[in-house]
Structure formats: C-alpha cells, structure tokens
Image 1 (spheres, helix red, strand yellow):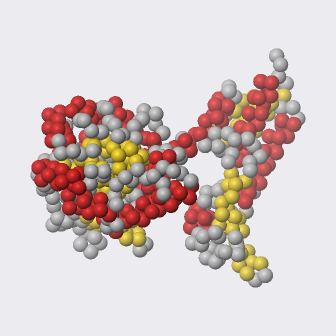
Image 2 (cartoon, each protein chain N blue to C red):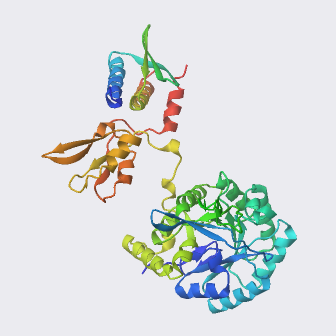
Image 3 (cartoon, rainbow over the protein chains, first blue to last red):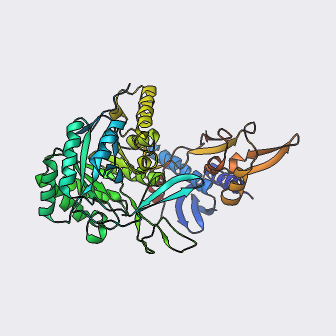
Length: 74
Length: 420
C-alpha cells in the first residue's frame, strides 16, 4: 500500500472512532510512530498511526476536540 | 531614479555598494579608480603592523564551467607601513569627500594598541572603522582576526577599547567560522559597536593537485588553510545576516558581505536586513566596472517596485524569516509538469525516483512520451523543479490543505495536554 493510501486509511480510522463517540484520551509518540488512546465511557481502544500525514491529521482533530471542550459550558 | 544613498550607522555613501577590505582596496590608486567607476564606499585593506606575505596566494574553484564559483586566499593584511596607507587615505578622501572610506583595523588584543591605531587612522578623516575579527588565516595564528572573533568576550572587550577613543562609527566584522554568529554579534553590540559586518571568509582548502599531490595553492610544496569567499558562500552569508537581523539583541545596522556578485544578490541582502553591501570577489573577477550594472539594476528594480529610496528596502524580508518550529506543517505545494514545454529529458523522473519520493510517472500518449506527477504522493520537495533544465516545464503550485494551519511548536504544545 502506498503511503498516501495508508494515510487515507489511518485518517478514516480516526474519523470513524470520533464519529462513533470516541474521544482522544492520550497520545504517545515513539520510534514506532504515534499511539492514540481513544475512550468512550468505559471503553478504550488504541490506534497506532504510522504515516506523517495521518499524524498531522490527528493533531488537527486534537485541536478540534480541545476547542469543543473549551466551548462546552461547565 | 530612486535614491540609492545609504546611511549606515551614520556613515553616508552615495550608493550601497562598497568594496570590502581585501586586495581591491590595497592602495589609494585602486580605491580612487573604484570611486571613479561608481563604488559608493571602500573598506580599506586591513591596517595593522605591516606583515609579510607568501607567494602564491589565491586559488579558485570552478564548477561546471562557472569560473570562480568560489575563491580562496591566503593573503594577509596590508604589508605597507601605516603612514603610507594613511597618506593615501587622506589624499583619496580629499578627492572624494562624499564617498565612504572605512578603515579596517587589526592589532593584537591590547587596549593601548587599539587606542593608538584608532587615533592615528581617525586623524586622516576616515568615515568609520571596521574591526577585523574575521580573517581566518595567518593573523589568527598570532591571536588576531578570527582567533579574537571566535571568543565573544574578546570581541566585546576589544570593541569596548575601540569605542573608548573612537569618534567615528565602529563596525565590527564577524567571522563565520563559529557555530552561531549571533553570539559574537551580540558581544559586539555589548561592547558598543555601531554596526556589524558579515561575513569574513570561511576556512578552506581549495583543492589538491592530483598529479603532484600538492595543495592548491601551495607555497613551495606546502599549503595552509585559507579563507573562502565568492558566489559559493552567498547562502551562508545571507543566513548569517538574516539571523542577526532578526535577533533583537543585535539592534545595530548590518553591512552584508559574502558572494555578492550583482544587484540581485545585493537586493537580497538588503531585504534580509543589510543596510549596505560589500563586494570583493566579483570585482576581482570582473573589475571595478561591474558596479555600473549593480547601480543600474538596483535602480531599475526600485523604480519598478515604486520604491523611492533604497533604505526602504532594508529588512523587508526579515519578518518572513523564522524558526523551523514556527512553519506551518499543513501548508502544501505539489509539482506540476507542463508537457508542452517539457523536453522529456526525464531528469525530474530520475531525481524523484532515485532520491526523493517516487511520484513522477512516465507514460505515453498517442505515442508521445509524457510525464505526470501523482500529486497525492508529492511532498513538495522542489527537487524536480530544481533539476529541470527548462524554464516553465515544472511549476510548484499550492494545494489548499483540508486541515487548519499548525506549526510544529503549536502541535507539540497541543499534544503535551494529551500525554498521560
């Protein structure tokens, strides 16, 4: 699979998790890429992101999530 | 006609083109001929205790037919007594009162030696002083030049000593043979410098003769490192000027030096924060008359842009020079190939396939060989456009990102909130 196709696949997985109510709980980066822990109530999943484009995309999603949380009235 | 006059820390000259302290400014005869040709100023070849030179002294690096792409020298400062130079400066200043004459100075790092030479040189009416803390060969072995210029404390202290007695503006000329030139530039400012100039030459060995195994140049079979300048060093010099120009602690004018060969180079240095430029190698290669094209070219450029004074150009690009961490990770450009112009040399395909990101495909259309960029795989590295021999065959075009701008620093700050 080309880097481009792989990045599209990874971005779709990010979108799918978010669309189904998951939120990013934690992020860890190391030599193997980025590991994103999504949480939905008591449920959590970990997604490994390999491609640079998808790691950029994930950062944009983190920004969206952060801005939404800031907008949410306490 | 735009106003090309500059005022660099109080030193006024009819245009921004000065000859750098070097062989072209060795004597009154040369400097006066340069002024007649149109140069706005000259930094006199460095004055100090007269030295002894060796023969041979210069070497050049040619690259793919381009003569003097780089220039190497092992010549030292003036070999003539101070009084001889001062008499010629006096005579030259009388003949050209409106041109800038700056005396380049180099003495041992002792307060009384700096005081002595500054007083003597200013007595003949120079417009400013340039402290040579950059010369990398010969003099450095004696504790002067770049040996002083690589130690911020020595730069600061010697600048301070000069400022104790100087009545004219003091420019401190910096060596590039240091990891971070802003450290020594800041030291010069702390010492009271009115301006800084950069770059002096870069430590170099021009080559080795494959038949004799001698260095190039060699002096009776032995060589020593020299100082490198000319077009090859321009990007290094331009970066150093820009780094100083955007450093708030280097809040003095900059005289730009390093591979400036034509008006375009000069304009780039001015945009990146230099108030004026100094030229050496191009004059040594082509003669003093090159300044005519420099003046015409810069004037036409300013007129074309509707800019009244060259001083209005100074520093305009500095705000656009930043740190890598402040660049937008989500800005995208991709290559596009115009097959109507392309000559099918395939250099772009080879470069991309072998050394970049494998995104240029070869195919045929109606029996004609064609090239196409797979834009989704193109990272916008520019390599294909760089190696393409045909103007207009490859364009780099912006592709609007679907995600908002975000720098590396912003990303790291954001992610830090999610590290648990």
